[in-house]
Amino acid sequence: MSGFYGASDPSGVLWTRTEELTFYLTLPTLLEIWRRWKRAGALVVAVAALGSWVMAQHFNITDKYNPFLSVTVGPTFWIFSMGVLARLYWHRVSKIFEGKLLWWPATHLAITWWVAGSSAAFI
Image (cartoon, rainbow, N blue to C red):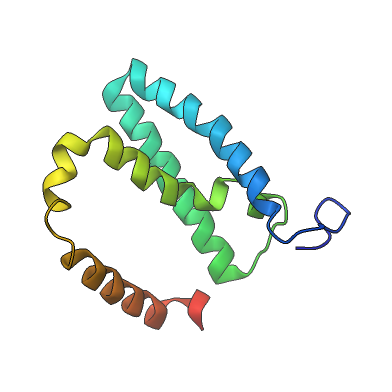
């Protein structure tokens, strides 16, 4: 990525640093809310995830590329939040994952095939 904040990057992977930093600043705040108010906290994480997913879809569909937001956790927090919520509620969701090694790759391939066929991001 060149031209980030008016300077070219010496490495194409430096964009991950700002994304990681914003994730590590955002996540503790959301987890503290979750720790203090269990149900409201889970709702806050879920709403943040949904907002992030909408932001990611907006970038993909409209091609409105925002250089600043593209290197923050904004458009990708929904991916991280699935893992966070799965960990927080592992005692409830473990049954759908454990012992189903072959089922999940097949599901992933089916969803990827469906999304690739119906998303403007893959056209």
